[in-house]
Length: 79
Image (cartoon, rainbow, N blue to C red; front, side, top):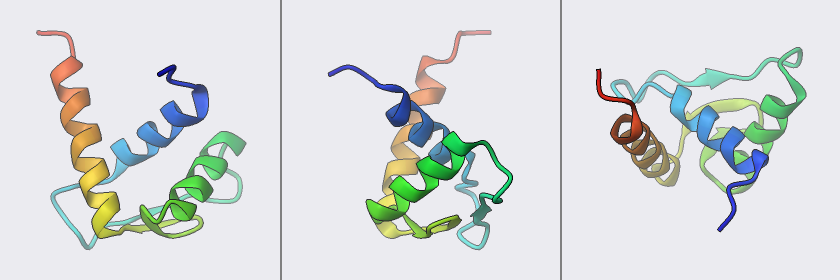
């Protein structure tokens, strides 16, 4: 499977969520980069976030964000 740019942008957005607090969401403002706005829309359509412009993670979104952030931590260079 090729990781296309849209997929990577969705992972980047999932990585921005704070997993330590379910009360903290994200807001993708209308002046954000078009790619960020589009990735929020796709995550909403996939039922991973609650609003088309961010909001909170759904239960499925929480699972996706946990896996995304865990993978990113595993692949970080050892310091």
